[in-house]
Length: 272
Image (cartoon, rainbow, N blue to C red):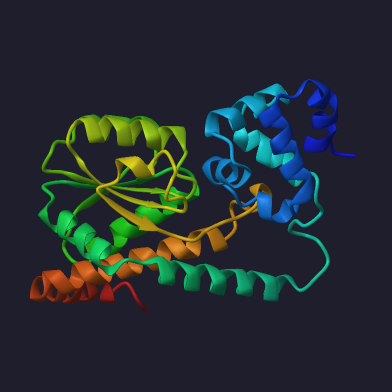
């Protein structure tokens, strides 16, 4: 049987502080399935404690941080992939919900601002870690057809090197569902200090990464720890990329249309 968060809570509950007891009570009185979707900031706000208090609670349980806490919490429920039920319907419903929710939260003014920043950039970089790296690469592929050169690095060392060379005239687009990936935070901090404009695409508006954004685009891509690689967490990012690239295309006008024709002709011979 897998160890759960509640097993560890029993070991420390007697010595819990007043705020820690509030956290414990919250855990015991709310559906675990819902709790798995919260970032540390969202969880702390729901409970009514600070992020630092929540982090200390995790460490008191003998965990390295909130990510491990959330993973261990997932062991307390059997509501994971592979359980009985209609998986096809569940996945489809999740995708539709993610797309609708992302659409509702899109701000056209922010989309336009991000597009204008991108078009004024001397150099353009798109970066992401893990699954979000695929979104960054897709963005580069998309705007390349409009004649825009956008660089993408998968390796975190080269990401850091590239960020160190950026200047005020440059723009970086960062993709991070959690908004709390250390590599992305380090790069965002470095780029921000250099005056680089940042377009940030994230699931958590109050995440540590969001504070560095000059243009913040919100995607709804919540998933439980063991489902973090699911397509549901990617599809809303791809939707925002399509919306943003469409705005870029509109603002570029005939230049983008001419580039699209050239690139279409260039790959035509690749098809049988």
